[in-house]
Amino acid sequence: MAAQFGRRLRRGATTTAVAAVAVAALAASQGPGAVLASAGGDTGGDQPAAGSTSSDDPVATGNSPYYTDLPPLVSPNKPGTSTNLPITGSAQSGIPASVLAAYKKAERSLADTDAACRLPWQLLAAIGKVESGQARGGRVDANGTTFSPILGPVLNGQGFAMIKDTDNGAYDGDSTHDRAVGPMQFIPSTWATWGQDGNGDGRKDPNNIYDAALAAGHYLCAGSRDLAVAADLDRAVLSYNHSNEYLRTVRSWFDYYRRGTHEVPDGSGVVPPPLGGGTDPSPNPGTSPSPTPPPSRKPDPKPDPKPDPKPDPKPSKPGGGSTSPEPSPKPTPGQTLGAVENAGTGKLTATAGDAFAERIKVRAKNSLGGPLAKVSVTFTIAGDTDARFEGGKSSVTLATGADGTVTAPVLQAGEKTGRFMVRAIATGRSLPAVLYTATVTARQADEIARTDGKALTAAPGAEFADTVAVKATYRGAVASGVAVTATMITDGDAPVENDKGPYFKDADGNTVRTLTDLKTGADGTLTLPKIYADDATGTYRLRLTTEGGATVVIELDVEAPAA
Image (cartoon, rainbow, N blue to C red; front, side, top):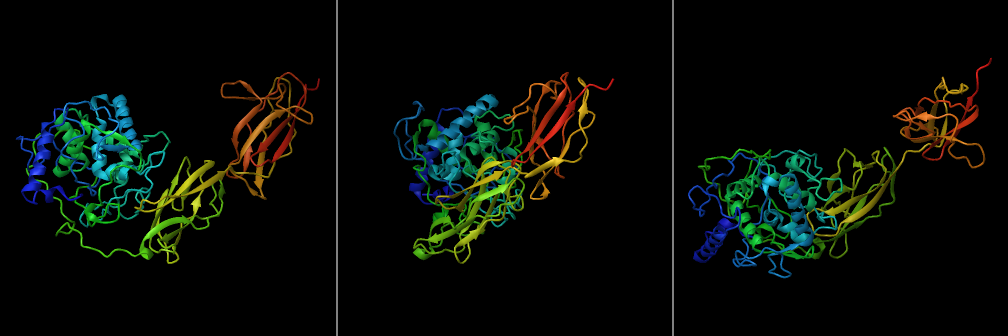
């Protein structure tokens, strides 16, 4: 159950005994950094541990809700046995394959870049368990990205920190306040500093377990910490979320995973009950157990030699009162979201720099197949592209209307050509995403011509006095940013690159007779580099071809000067 640890301690002798056994088992571990560091050796209270951060030290999460379930009292292996992964084991010791791979990859990466930190992957696993239930039981795609964003509560100061928007809603879909994002629950401002590309796809995505795990590793290792030292490990965990309850819970799972784990298929991991007993798998600000923290900032590398004299407040429901949720009526099939689907979006194609004429449209349906209004849908641009929604956003969240549909903002193509994806998901729901393929084509020209009619002549071994300037247009309008190829060609019906006659020079002064990567300017014009003549006389041809197929052939005369 996902009841709060603090509440367990107040539920009578049986619950108290269970918690005491768990803490005692934790303190008995002999692994590096496995014992809670405390000033007096007493871990029963909620005082900050020795070496912990002060109350104004940074947090990675903004104290989003976290799961406080403790692991089973019987670890998968006895203390001191091998931590090699067994083929089978208890359900709680199973970690989804992609999530486990991400933790181990982050450990290897930090061992290469910051070996002195000695980051154990089991610490990442413990934090991932407490923050998101291992990405909600490993509900990630083949690249490690969660099928739907994992979002914390709105940090609007109502029971949580007041953190105004820092990412224009790019990661959390909220352009007013920040929310913690992803399986490791980073707030956007922290992600901006610590975000990593853990899977090598060229993007830093907090919703990707590989990216998030590597970022969490760097964050925990900040300040020259050695995580094999108990005090440094405690300090690292408290920098993630400054609560001794959080520290004890993470430490319990860390010890549990160090005694043994096993791999399970993605999507088949144990998913903790929704925080507070609700039905929505997303963290809900009305059921969070976390106290209000300060906004995130860079961790303080200097240890605090004195324990904080003020105990952490025990987590409670924001606004005071009982943390037990009020019973709510069960939704009817007509009120239950059944699916999201493409609502007739056409082909998504645009020229570089232009807006897509077609707009992405999604329909939400209830369990009976009818339209469902007020469903939150998040549209996210994915892939190697600089395309953005109107306003420069890569992600935006909107709600469906009375007909169950919602249309994304206008999609603006960037300068990078090729294909990319747009993913539409029901925000905070474990439903399949709707995927759209979009294509950005290169700028084109259907005509290219010289800007003047001067004869182009040079003596053998000399350079041409006049330069070649051309202008490209498309349907009569200026064609800016169009790719142009210039080639010295042979005569005949099937011309090829000429190996004699006029030529260009590259940056090293070498002879070249074909130039690529040329582009017209904002006014559609292009001026070629200087052209040189070799010793061969005669009339030669220079061909310029644009993206789109427009061509112009220019004559170059090499002749000896008159006697």
